[in-house]
Length: 173
Image 1 (cartoon, rainbow, N blue to C red):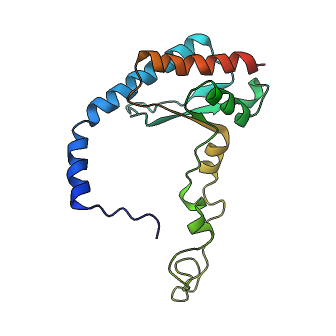
Image 2 (image 1 turned 180 degrees about the vertical axis):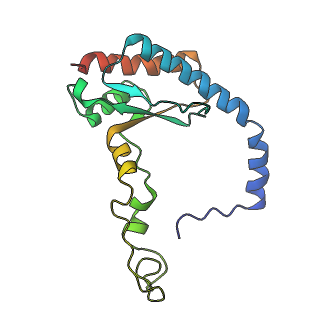
Image 3 (image 1 turned 90 degrees about the horizontal axis):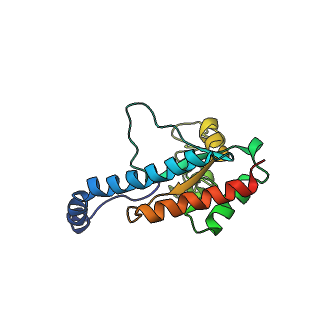
Protein backbone atom coordinates (compact mmCIF):
# COMPACT_ATOMS: atom_id res chain seq x y z
CA UNK A 1 0.00 0.00 0.00
CA UNK A 2 1.42 3.38 -0.93
CA UNK A 3 4.92 4.33 -1.90
CA UNK A 4 7.76 1.81 -1.79
CA UNK A 5 10.46 3.21 0.50
CA UNK A 6 12.82 0.22 0.49
CA UNK A 7 16.37 1.46 0.13
CA UNK A 8 19.27 -0.23 -1.61
CA UNK A 9 22.68 -0.49 0.07
CA UNK A 10 24.07 2.02 -2.45
CA UNK A 11 21.26 4.46 -1.68
CA UNK A 12 21.94 4.03 2.04
CA UNK A 13 25.66 4.72 1.55
CA UNK A 14 24.91 7.91 -0.38
CA UNK A 15 22.30 8.94 2.19
CA UNK A 16 24.73 8.42 5.05
CA UNK A 17 27.22 10.80 3.45
CA UNK A 18 24.48 13.31 2.61
CA UNK A 19 23.28 13.33 6.23
CA UNK A 20 26.63 14.86 7.23
CA UNK A 21 25.63 17.94 5.19
CA UNK A 22 22.23 18.28 6.86
CA UNK A 23 23.17 20.77 9.63
CA UNK A 24 24.62 23.20 7.08
CA UNK A 25 21.64 22.77 4.74
CA UNK A 26 19.17 23.48 7.54
CA UNK A 27 21.20 26.49 8.74
CA UNK A 28 21.14 28.02 5.24
CA UNK A 29 17.39 27.47 4.92
CA UNK A 30 16.77 29.04 8.33
CA UNK A 31 18.94 32.05 7.47
CA UNK A 32 17.04 32.58 4.21
CA UNK A 33 13.70 32.34 6.00
CA UNK A 34 14.80 34.84 8.66
CA UNK A 35 15.48 37.38 5.89
CA UNK A 36 12.13 36.69 4.19
CA UNK A 37 10.19 36.93 7.46
CA UNK A 38 11.94 40.13 8.57
CA UNK A 39 11.30 41.87 5.25
CA UNK A 40 7.63 40.82 5.18
CA UNK A 41 7.19 42.01 8.74
CA UNK A 42 8.86 45.35 8.02
CA UNK A 43 6.63 45.83 4.94
CA UNK A 44 3.52 45.02 6.99
CA UNK A 45 2.23 42.58 4.39
CA UNK A 46 -1.58 42.46 4.50
CA UNK A 47 -2.76 39.62 2.22
CA UNK A 48 -0.94 36.84 4.07
CA UNK A 49 0.72 35.96 7.34
CA UNK A 50 3.51 33.49 7.94
CA UNK A 51 2.79 30.45 10.04
CA UNK A 52 3.54 30.61 13.75
CA UNK A 53 6.44 28.54 14.95
CA UNK A 54 5.55 26.49 18.00
CA UNK A 55 7.43 27.56 21.15
CA UNK A 56 10.50 25.39 21.63
CA UNK A 57 10.47 24.14 18.04
CA UNK A 58 12.68 25.15 15.11
CA UNK A 59 11.64 24.58 11.55
CA UNK A 60 14.05 23.21 8.95
CA UNK A 61 12.07 25.19 6.33
CA UNK A 62 11.92 22.73 3.47
CA UNK A 63 8.98 25.00 2.73
CA UNK A 64 6.85 27.46 4.69
CA UNK A 65 3.15 28.03 5.01
CA UNK A 66 1.56 31.42 4.62
CA UNK A 67 -2.06 31.90 5.61
CA UNK A 68 -4.00 33.73 2.92
CA UNK A 69 -6.10 36.53 4.42
CA UNK A 70 -8.92 36.77 1.89
CA UNK A 71 -10.67 39.59 3.74
CA UNK A 72 -7.61 41.81 3.18
CA UNK A 73 -6.98 41.03 -0.47
CA UNK A 74 -8.62 41.95 -3.80
CA UNK A 75 -7.89 38.61 -5.47
CA UNK A 76 -8.19 34.90 -4.68
CA UNK A 77 -5.50 32.79 -3.06
CA UNK A 78 -4.80 31.18 -6.43
CA UNK A 79 -4.41 34.55 -8.18
CA UNK A 80 -2.19 35.92 -5.41
CA UNK A 81 0.03 32.82 -5.51
CA UNK A 82 0.25 32.89 -9.30
CA UNK A 83 1.29 36.56 -9.20
CA UNK A 84 4.05 35.86 -6.66
CA UNK A 85 5.26 32.92 -8.78
CA UNK A 86 5.18 35.15 -11.89
CA UNK A 87 7.60 37.46 -10.05
CA UNK A 88 10.02 34.54 -9.87
CA UNK A 89 9.48 33.37 -6.31
CA UNK A 90 8.85 29.66 -5.65
CA UNK A 91 5.27 29.92 -4.42
CA UNK A 92 2.08 27.88 -4.84
CA UNK A 93 -1.53 28.15 -3.70
CA UNK A 94 -1.46 25.15 -1.40
CA UNK A 95 0.04 21.92 -0.23
CA UNK A 96 -1.76 19.09 -2.00
CA UNK A 97 -0.37 16.28 0.09
CA UNK A 98 -3.22 14.83 2.11
CA UNK A 99 -2.23 11.17 2.03
CA UNK A 100 -5.80 9.91 1.88
CA UNK A 101 -6.58 12.17 -1.10
CA UNK A 102 -4.18 10.26 -3.36
CA UNK A 103 -5.95 8.42 -6.19
CA UNK A 104 -4.61 5.03 -5.13
CA UNK A 105 -6.48 5.42 -1.85
CA UNK A 106 -9.59 7.31 -3.01
CA UNK A 107 -10.04 4.96 -5.99
CA UNK A 108 -9.02 1.90 -3.96
CA UNK A 109 -6.29 0.95 -6.43
CA UNK A 110 -4.27 -1.49 -4.32
CA UNK A 111 -4.38 -5.15 -3.31
CA UNK A 112 -5.70 -6.43 -6.62
CA UNK A 113 -9.40 -7.32 -6.62
CA UNK A 114 -9.74 -8.15 -2.91
CA UNK A 115 -10.98 -4.69 -1.90
CA UNK A 116 -8.70 -4.86 1.14
CA UNK A 117 -8.34 -2.88 3.25
CA UNK A 118 -11.34 -0.69 2.31
CA UNK A 119 -14.09 -3.26 2.04
CA UNK A 120 -12.27 -6.40 3.04
CA UNK A 121 -14.36 -9.58 3.18
CA UNK A 122 -12.13 -10.81 6.02
CA UNK A 123 -13.00 -7.79 8.15
CA UNK A 124 -16.58 -7.29 7.03
CA UNK A 125 -16.60 -3.49 7.18
CA UNK A 126 -16.32 -0.52 4.87
CA UNK A 127 -13.80 2.31 5.17
CA UNK A 128 -14.15 5.76 3.65
CA UNK A 129 -11.46 8.41 3.93
CA UNK A 130 -13.48 11.21 2.35
CA UNK A 131 -13.29 14.29 4.57
CA UNK A 132 -11.83 12.30 7.46
CA UNK A 133 -9.42 15.10 8.42
CA UNK A 134 -11.39 18.35 8.20
CA UNK A 135 -8.67 20.42 9.90
CA UNK A 136 -6.04 19.21 7.43
CA UNK A 137 -8.40 20.04 4.57
CA UNK A 138 -9.03 23.50 6.03
CA UNK A 139 -5.27 23.99 6.22
CA UNK A 140 -4.89 23.26 2.51
CA UNK A 141 -7.79 25.59 1.76
CA UNK A 142 -6.49 28.64 3.62
CA UNK A 143 -2.71 28.26 3.35
CA UNK A 144 -0.25 28.92 0.55
CA UNK A 145 3.21 27.39 0.29
CA UNK A 146 6.55 29.00 -0.38
CA UNK A 147 9.74 27.07 -0.97
CA UNK A 148 13.11 27.82 0.60
CA UNK A 149 16.26 26.29 -0.85
CA UNK A 150 19.65 25.88 0.73
CA UNK A 151 21.20 27.58 -2.29
CA UNK A 152 19.42 30.83 -1.35
CA UNK A 153 21.82 33.52 -0.26
CA UNK A 154 20.84 36.89 1.14
CA UNK A 155 20.04 38.20 -2.36
CA UNK A 156 17.76 35.32 -3.31
CA UNK A 157 15.91 35.44 0.01
CA UNK A 158 15.44 39.19 -0.38
CA UNK A 159 14.20 38.66 -3.95
CA UNK A 160 11.54 36.26 -2.68
CA UNK A 161 10.43 38.77 -0.03
CA UNK A 162 10.36 41.61 -2.56
CA UNK A 163 8.19 39.52 -4.92
CA UNK A 164 5.68 38.85 -2.14
CA UNK A 165 5.71 42.50 -1.04
CA UNK A 166 5.18 43.74 -4.61
CA UNK A 167 2.17 41.46 -5.11
CA UNK A 168 0.80 42.30 -1.67
CA UNK A 169 1.01 46.05 -2.35
CA UNK A 170 -0.78 45.59 -5.69
CA UNK A 171 -3.63 43.48 -4.28
CA UNK A 172 -4.19 44.57 -0.68
CA UNK A 173 -7.46 46.28 0.13
